[in-house]
Length: 466
Image (cartoon, rainbow, N blue to C red; front, top):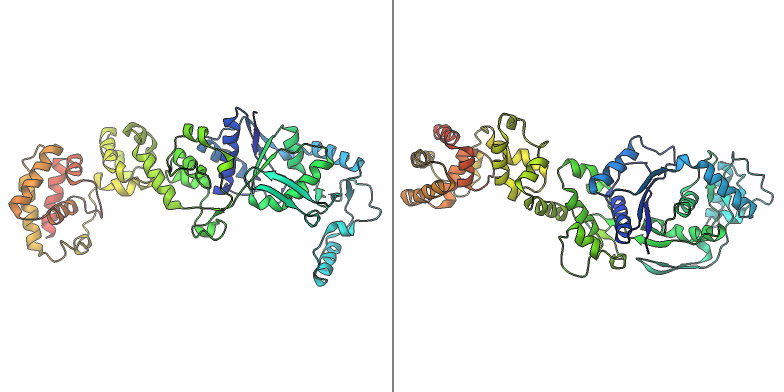
């Protein structure tokens, strides 16, 4: 059966990891069955809507490669449809005008609190509600009873009558509530499979009641456990350092890595495999294997995974992706030189925003920082005169090199014999003296890319410092 799924966020803020994962799982279910993936913007809470959030949602999905087949639909464009369905409920005796003021509702809630009883609106239904004119809220007349249903992730679920109450269908501002609008929209758009986060579980009995009142066959329901913070104890939040999805894009995380990471955030195929291609995920993904407990968000794992994807890029592809990340000093150098630099740092690169820090030494002379010597356990206790002598010997040996990697490697190894030094001392000293960076790629390879003129000039400058 071809499934029709949807992602229906509210444009009340930036798209977070949990929301994107919901969209991803819905997209996968649709694509696996040659179905449709619908994007719907549930913008009925006008007071909380954030300007630009709708575009941010669309940009986030497109960056990740989750292209929708229909939409984006906006609920604010469909108010006449919700009124039509509200009238059906009124005619069926399943909806009524809520005549209470906010202060009257507050009094009823306070009374229930004093009596230590749960507040249920259905216990305070007006005997003769006025005809609904759209200026007051319209409430659903619920039918409290036991509900049982199968959840594609959580399994068999049930609730008692206490979970059912009269909720608002349409607010006094004319906009429908989520509880009402999404059920109407899902039906009219042919949605067959609804995936939502765990925070909506307590509302599902109300949804089931409304499905029955509207004589609508409910779709398959699937509840995703929450994404937990790094400590695995509570829901992931901004306080845990969580970023919105496009912040990761700006930092140079690759969409394929994020796709892989998100799909394995609470799902696995029963193996220890962690890296999947998109095709593999499309073949193997199964909602039945989504775990029922919360999945811990581990940014270190995401970063490791991103590094894996970067290492497997061709230099041409990596260079194309890196165009906005070079340090300003790189503008004076040609593309071939930049590609050579990239080939050196690719193995250590975890995300593209690291490029300036890792490559700046190849484009400009960094300031001399003798703390790099003092904090090196092998070099810290060696006298400066000795260090200067080692650098002079190194300069002499390298001055006759053709600066191919092979010749540089041979000369550096010969220097070890000539100076009676270990690589930990001599190579560390040459590396620092030619880069003045806390870390750099392989020595011979780095000197090859820097070139003879730059290497000897930097050695001369460092010899003077000692």
